[in-house]
Image 1 (cartoon, chains in turn blue, orange):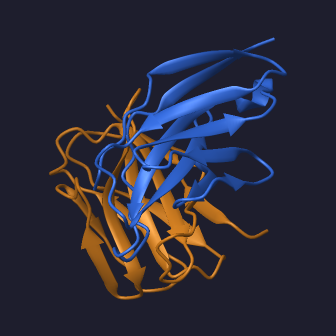
Image 2 (spheres, rainbow over the protein chains, first blue to last red):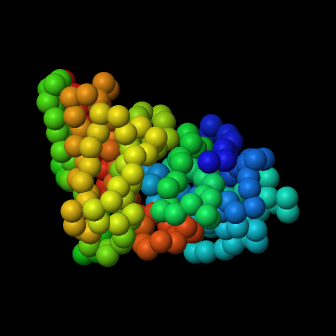
Length: 112
Length: 114
């Protein structure tokens, strides 16, 4: 599985946008970029995923660089409930079974 | 309610004892997974099953065993051979044979070895 690099932690103010970066310089053409988040003592929760084009859903937006070597998860207006660990994961489309490999992720702290 | 049920939520075990963690789902998902999480770490894959009566080892399968006799159930046994079993265990499911869909996670089971 190709590796991702994320900052250990980030801090944001409530009601402001948050940009969470992820580097994946060894990404292959068939790797999808997935984002999950995990609240304390809970299981991870799916946020968004994409391949080449930018993606939007009700939770967030995913901006993918043109060369696909990096991506950014965008929370448009951070709330206290968005404080969590955010994981950026690459998923090979040819590998069956949704086997995801999680790194340490980015701890997002939101200040009121 | 539809979802994934893990039990027990908290479990204490003496060294040398085997313990089985339950994972039940009513989402009609084909694939099921077991992950382990240590404090401050990401998740590591223990075992996964893509279909009933079939399962594969993940990255850290030593000291663990699983079975998949029913689509709804994927129990994990932590055996005495697991050197450091204290951890947070997470069960997950995914629908069908898609490689792009999301994983759904249970609430987790926290195992402490005394």
